[in-house]
Length: 142
Image (cartoon, rainbow, N blue to C red; front, side, top):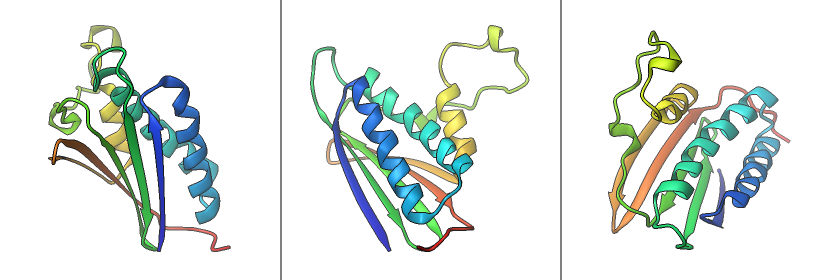
């Protein structure tokens, strides 16, 4: 069982800490570069949303990211105290619609849902909790 936690501020510069956190997890679990890039992309999408939209401009707040691996599934939980927002409630965009004809936004969570095996949201005690699960079939146990 692996369990790691990262606490960071709602600032764009902090995304590099998230990337390093993902890199560390992938190294520890021996995951390949493609999966690492996909996990980074998924987290960058959801973390950026929290940074840009969860808090009033000028407000500094903590965001937490918890990673757990039980031998089969990597679970990532993003937690913030920003305004209530359930990204999973948004309908998936129609992939057949030309990008120029699409409404702005909405692609991020669609990308995340395609990378992860399961994405769920809950609001608990004033916190947004976005849980993302990825089944890991092959790891290099160091």
